Each structure stands twice: as C-alpha cells, then as structure tokens.
Length: 274
Image 1 (cartoon, rainbow, N blue to C red):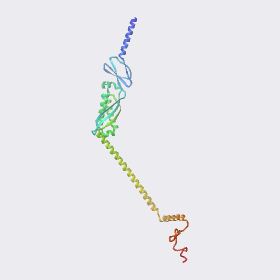
Image 2: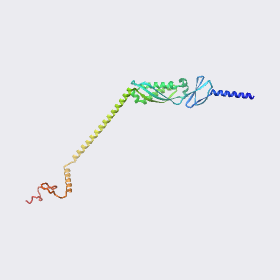
Image 3: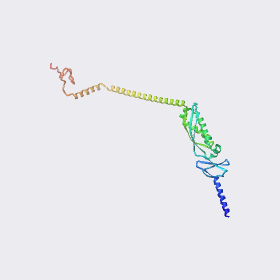
Image 4: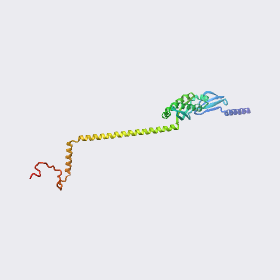
C-alpha cells in the first residue's frame, strides 16, 4: 500500500511538473489585449488584462498593444504649383480594444507597417497637391487638419484611432527657398519704406500745424496793436525812464535836454524877456 501511494504521489508530481513546463496560464499585461488561437485559428473573444488559462500545445495567447503608439515618417510630394515638398510628420495612434482580433488577423499584428505608414504617405500626398508651396507654409494648421481627416477615415476601417498628428517640417528645393527669402526681404523693405513715408507725412503735418498756429498768433497780435496801445506803451516806457533818471542834466551843450517837452507858446518860455 505504501509503495502504491508513493507511486501515485510521484506520478502526480510528474504530471504537475509537465503541466507547469507547458505553461497552461498566460498573462496579459497592462496596455495590451489578448487574442487566443487554437492551432493557429484566432477566437473572436478579446482577453483583457490579467491571467488566463490556455490548453498547452493547442492554444497560444498573443498580445496586441492598445496603448498609444508613436510613429514618424517622411517622404516627398508635389504641391499644387508643382514644387517638390519633402515632408516629415509624427503620429500618435492606438488600436481600439474591441478591434484587436481583426488587427491581429487582418494586419498580422503589425498596424504600423501595414496601415499607418502607407496611409500617412497617401494622405500627405493627396492633401499637399491641393495647396501651393506658399500656402503649405501660411496655412499649415489647415493642411494638418485635412491630413488628419483623411487618415481617420482610412484608419477607422481597420480599428485604428488617430490621437495626435503633427507636421514636423516642410522642406523645399534650394531655388524655392531662395525665392521665399528674397520675397521676405522685399516685403520687409517695403514695410520699412511705408513706415518711413508715414513718419515723414506725420512730421510734415506737424510742421504745417505749427506754422499755421504761429501765423494765426501773429495775425491776432497785429489785430490787437492799436494807436491807443502804442501811446500807452510809449507812456509806460517814458515813466520807466523817469524812474531811472538821477535828476542831473547833461553837462554838454548843443544837444536837446532829455525828457523836457518845450511848447511853442507859454509863459514859461526862455525867450519871454527879450
């Protein structure tokens, strides 16, 4: 009896060891979903994060990332005015959790290579062809929005979602870059000339205003100068001179005595006694 019990215990241990070695349990880590295949055929069920049982040898659990993935790419396209445009873009996307089975089955669990890259290239070329090279620069946000719209329509059919899309850079031919630089310089010079002209016009108007004000002031002063005002100013000047006089007459003869008004007739004349 003891030998039979020991044999059963050994057999159970061996079976357990075989099961453990065959890994009957599989884990789906965070940010992923699982697709179970039985002899290579995927089941329609989506396995969420956690531990799941599988039949060893017969079944395998495959992981499909559903967290946000990042991709970058670049390529050449032609603008509406037939300028060659080298575009570099960046995209963030993720797989819809409920669509992981189709992504695994239809895209071989490689959405980046199978869908993302060709979809981005096609969308960039299609949208770039609707804008001139200059518009690609001046209307960059509109170009980006139209590319995103085209991407979302195509990627949604395969269970993919666009989270972010950005145009990293536009590069043009050397000739076009030189033409843009020349135009920018010309625009800057034109703006400077316009500002200088505005400043000159303002200064001229200021000078005219000042001259007009001075002329009006002089005209007003001339209107205010009357004979009575002149006599008043003369009287004021004589009064100031008398205040400054020290009372002594000049010692030289032959000149007029200042400040004395000699009348032609009056009892105070110097010739009255002759």
